Image (cartoon, rainbow, N blue to C red):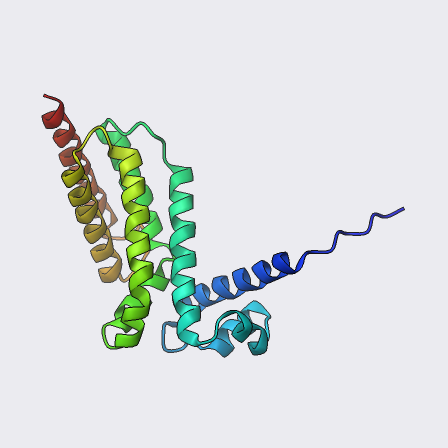
Length: 208
């Protein structure tokens, strides 16, 4: 006899629908940009009706902000899973920075770039994104603390994270080709190596 597949609960169906919509919205933002990412486009890509979408997200803005939160949470989780805990050498720190660079340049992270640019001219979107931005900052500080606590004092920890984020975000905004291997990839790799050397030299100053 063939076993009858277990029916999903209402909560599981709801989660599957919202995840499909968030993934679809992130893909639309990456491929076609903010202006073209309508609720209709997200629904078509997710295979979900607009009626179903509005049961979960009452407005387009709510969908976009939830997508930013979804992408941030997933990126942080994937980053935590991809890096080790021993970051005491230049090679190890350079490897961490390379992982971060790949995350920042990923198609999914284009969600944040599109929304942040749009928010410059949209006060409502800017205000709606603020809690998501603050949450992402807290998550990143927690990751930085796990990596560098004990090596750097708290003030330096936040400052180092600010330098890393601003360098990588600047590269992401200026890069015409998001491929980390594309020009000026080697120059960037050298820049990240220099940054890793600075971080480790700071370790040594604190321990001396």
